[in-house]
Amino acid sequence: MSQAAALAQRLQEVILDGTWIANTNFKKELNTTSLAQVSIPIRSYNTVEVLAQHIHYYIAGVKQVFLRGELSISDRFSFDFEPLQSDQEWQNFLALFWKNTEELIALIQPLSDAQLDAIFVKEAYGTYKRNIEALIEHSYYHLGQIVLLLKTEAST
Image 1 (tube, rainbow, N blue to C red):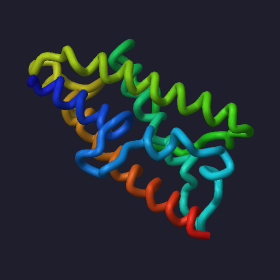
Image 2: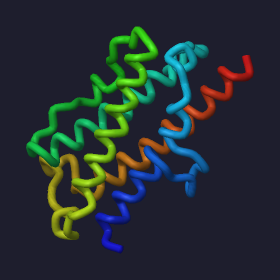
Image 3: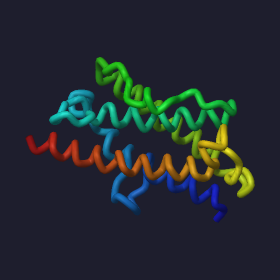
């Protein structure tokens, strides 16, 4: 398996269908939730809704780099989302999250090793490989938070 195919598979696992690392994934955790469940504030923590939007923000932003060569997202805005207003909006968001992830996976899979080692937008950001790996690791970090928040909410 190529490096790119392995990275694409890891992104697919954490977001869409894997269980090897965390025994779960975003889609498994979120697909059967309602907006009421994911928007419950627990202490001063980010809600599940915000964490899911946060990860999608990065997936959509990295996808745009692949498609247009420019980075239009910024860390300082990565938690700035208007609250969703209905279960339909939540389901629409999830559908977009899964779709953008699938599209990014398809863009990663065919990359050569040279493309993975190329500069991602500008030198300060490192390589494509480094950014894809960071996206995967960042996703697992927040997946763990989501699992804990959903368990905390269910136990109250």
